[in-house]
Length: 125
Image 1 (tube, rainbow, N blue to C red):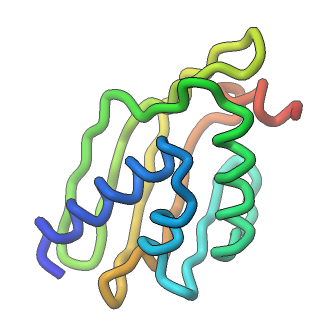
Image 2 (spheres, rainbow, N blue to C red):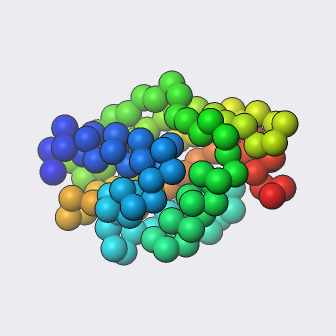
């Protein structure tokens, strides 16, 4: 895939996550996708991640990615953004960096880096 095609895939993925559209997220994911989160040290496989994203869309009001900066290159992308939303009375504002690898036209690996203190209201749920 060209960097422009990877950019379109990443744009589609993050728009679907923000919209709570798990079907489109699933379509963006390679069947063997693995998603690693630095704050847990765990790797999620496709179904685990989709379940978590469905929960996220029910839990976070006004979920959005803001201040998005993305660099795409052959084989992947790096995206920096601020994840924003509301959980109960608490606001979330989490600067995040995502590193993605693309294989066969789909997102094959995602590595998410954020300070867990910024998502503390979510981790308490």
